[in-house]
Amino acid sequence: MKKNDIVSGKSVKDILAMDNRTFNRLTESELRKVVGRLVSAGNKRLRSFEKSGESSPATRYIEKSGGKFSTRGKDLNALRAEFARAKGFFESKTGSRSEWKKVQKETQKGLEKAGVDVDPENANKMWKAYERLKEVNPAVSDKRLKYLVLQEIADVLVDDPDLSIRKIVNRVNKSIDRIYEEQAAINDEFEGVSGFFEIE
Image (cartoon, rainbow, N blue to C red; front, side):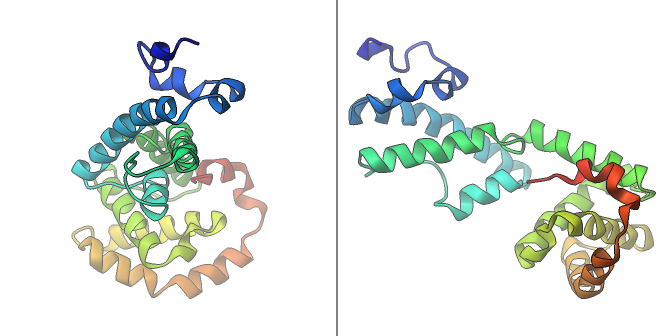
């Protein structure tokens, strides 16, 4: 590989597909250029989420693992770690708004299949409340608990669709112990739709 071909004319997908042998032979200067391309594209995705007021499992991971992508002040090993962080973000099924919306739509179909009536007008509010609730109480990220928490939020919205996100989160958070007990009692009835709830 010629040195001036490191990023020239290459897409993010091309860069991420780089084989280990080539990657391990990159100099610090070359790696900085490679990671710099990922930093630019990754931060553009993060800004898109921020502008929309949304977050996803992938964006929350980035926030918790060091914040926005950067090459500033990083040596060779730190650049490799940043490459790995960016690679995980780009390859995540919730690393772009379009992919995150696809996951939401699939999950919503699963909820409807399981008998949870989600008003399309309330769907966005339901997801915002769910994302906020995960920040308040990380326990709701439990695979099986996700379904019941989303159901609880949907039920709250059916009763009072005008509730603010904050009030929905407070109300559902108070019910977490009960929801957790229900989760423990779930039988195989929902096994057929469990795939819908594989949100990262």
